[in-house]
Amino acid sequence: MNDFLDIFLEAERILKEKLVEVEQSIAQDQKQRLEAQEQLVRIRKEEKLNAYGIMNDSVLALQNIEVTNLPKAQNREVFVRITCENSTYQTERRPYRQNARWDEQFKA
Image (cartoon, rainbow, N blue to C red; front, side):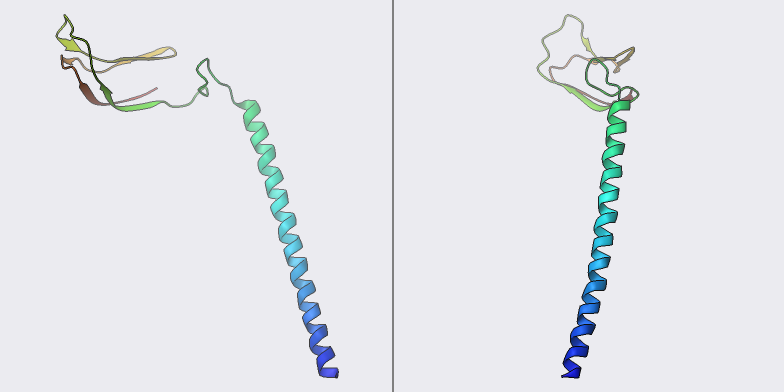
């Protein structure tokens, strides 16, 4: 009978230790979640969007620009002009094709 009680009490002690560890882990996870939520709120307050819903000071990268079904042009050259806020970028001029593609990269 004493062996049974010793084993039972030891199992109860181990379970209590594990329960304390789990409670501490849950408390730590909750603290990290709250910190992350607070940081998200701060970031959203700091985030400034332009008229197009794009965050100010963000980077816009364009590559492999393609146009299709271009109408026949009097000018035999085609190009793409991209304007983003105060910056304008233009691809190189190419001979007219109804479907044109440029493998150029722009970062605004």
